[in-house]
Image (cartoon, rainbow, N blue to C red):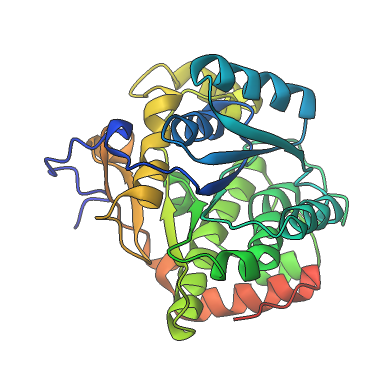
Length: 308
């Protein structure tokens, strides 16, 4: 049995190896805290113009100020988006597209974990709606801008937890919850990877100048576990900082060695900690039939038809 990560790799990649990003634009969802904030900070440190897409703009402004304190010449902008409301996602995509700007990096980072049994504004199961459908809409609405920018990259963030996920297409079509929060979370993270692989297939077939990559942070100490008492208790064990959790995302986006269609995560034991390396997705995540079916269902549920 192969290990879920290339944990024997000698890779020692760190953000100080990121090339100059001057003139490039990065949009990061959930950039006000945790891994998203660290991605925004490192991209700003290397000259990128960063867009912090956050539900709470006051928190986003404080995050932008922290970046400005660390990087005095940083070019940051805060944009409001509530990923639990697809209308808000549409408005964000419209504002970004209307600027007529380039878009080099889209980090589909924000997510919820072990949230209470609630629904999104459109009535979708909360984890699936926020973690998958919102980023499905955002990505497809921004594809024209991304594809007009040479060498642009879409980073989809999944989780080691996708391995316990299964897609209940009938339940999702009926907008019903899968029964418990851990199952819902795993399902949404599996959906992230199925989306990634189908997006890569479509971009490749279209000979697009945009690459699709995926990444996971391992077990990072962030606020994502705030809804789970058990995770808060075990988080100090075999975990790493939010900063190091951001490294696989940054590697996937900026490293010349990162390839389209690949999935990256920490290279340590079980893929929970360590330096960025190629990771192995579960067989369910690599099922092209399921990926295509999920894409079609996502179009039906959101009303957003892909241009590729």
